[in-house]
Amino acid sequence: MIDPLPHEKGFHVSWDQLHRDARALAWRLDGHGPDDGNWRAVVAITRGGMAPAMIVARELDIRTVDTISVKSYNHQTQSEPKVIKSPDMDVIGDGTGVLIVDDLVDTGRTLEVVRAHMPNAHVATVYAKPMGRSQVQTFVTEVSQDTWIFFPWDMALQYVEPYRGA
Image 1: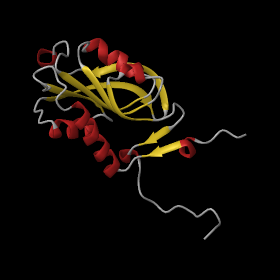
Image 2: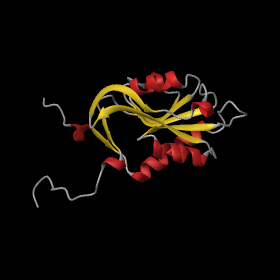
Image 3: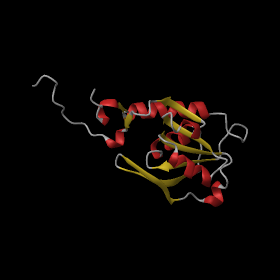
Image 4: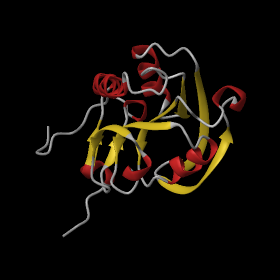
């Protein structure tokens, strides 16, 4: 048996699908914040968490939005995560009432680093893989660990040859 190439065990997400799934994430989070059901801020993990965080913030009418940037991938190779930009910690504090939003939890290593900065925040991702699942309180869709998710910002429309020639 030949191991599948990354694109053969892929989960392709369109902009429309990402929008629907991020709205579903907001629906799951609605009314579950510690301030009478409300959340006081959203922190997006850049870059993948920015689009879902914007949608969640819009749907839940959260006006305080910041980012944390953690570098843990070089293309499709994962390395040791490192914070390269932190949110305004005077505003975010220990994370109480804050939603941390990302597109995906894979191994959970990135979220371990983020949680150390905001230990009381609620972590929500659109997609989750089993190895990192314990780092997330709320998610929409779980995929197998060996599935590569192709996000719309990584893709371009182009012609593809048919299997049996043209």
